Length: 375
DNA sequence: AAATTATTCAACCGCCTTCAT
DNA sequence: CATGAAGGCGGTTGAATAATT
Figure 1 (cartoon, rainbow, N blue to C red):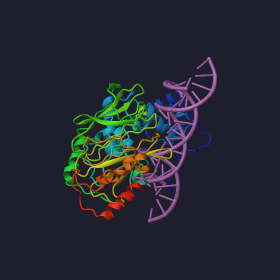
Figure 2 (spheres, helix red, strand yellow):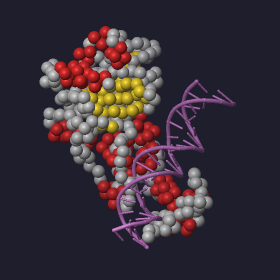
Figure 3 (spheres, protein in one colour):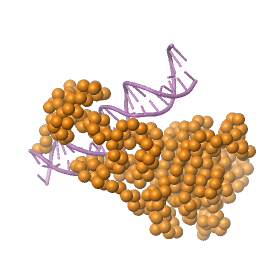
Figure 4 (spheres, rainbow, N blue to C red):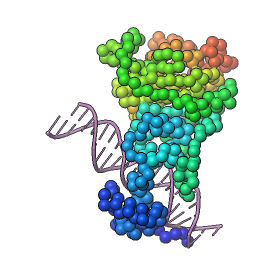
């Protein structure tokens, strides 16, 4: 037989804790130590489930908790660790003294997930050697139970790789090394800088259009043309030459308020990648596609965003910043001038790394690619 | 000032592994 | 070995609060 039940759920108090309950719980634990959650409520004179007591203590009453806002340094650590560990909140919190998994999780969901939508690591890469100091993590040493990451149990809700094809990379070791460097040392600086007036770009209608342009080598800016005819730099992104699938997408509310999405590419090495943003029911979808030897059912990354968008863009050719960022997908598919450029638009699917020659892909295969691409 | 909408975050839920029985 | 509760975790909810209309 197993153990006796931890608590009867009937007649127990739920909801917010009162100051009096907090005091009872704190006093009891300070006198008797943590643990024994089953018997704790009764002994402490609390009409609470042991689980509830444990949560309250762990998340709010512990004496070693750090109060106050998450600092910029902590935020950066969260971003870096989340890029590597995913939603392993307990593990992430273990690297930030005085912070709880619940706090980190809430902070991510309410602050960071909208600002930095994704960091993508191709699944065929080994986990980068991010140094995680397990000695700082109570999780590692104390863990008795604990659920398996849901990412292992079901499809990731916000990002999924739907392919079983591993895209070819010229030098996987080099790629892994670059990713490792990114994560361990060189996380890009996302600077939500104050709006900076710039001369308006003629290609943007006033009041519409958000796009990216090269600001200087190694960085790009997210730009919007405002109602008064001035471009505004909304955010700046610094990338590292040779980034692989390095997509930081800044989804600040101010960027999507008039039904436009924004995206950019971090991939400037062999093969390249494209990201397409398209409207879907209840939001929009970003699709990342490798260009090198891309085939139907090739490597696809898909993200569902909560905001709405009608702005559809595609970049093509060599992964440089001298592109026309303002392609309108509707124009392409509706058959106006851009449709006539179909081959140019889609040639990225079978171009070589320099965007000059074509890799060996039969016309039949190209047709299949196009069909898949538009499907 | 009131109503509406958006955001935050404390608390709960359900599931997992471990381990006492 | 089988059973089932304990302890622990990530996902989700909804009340409280803030911001906007």
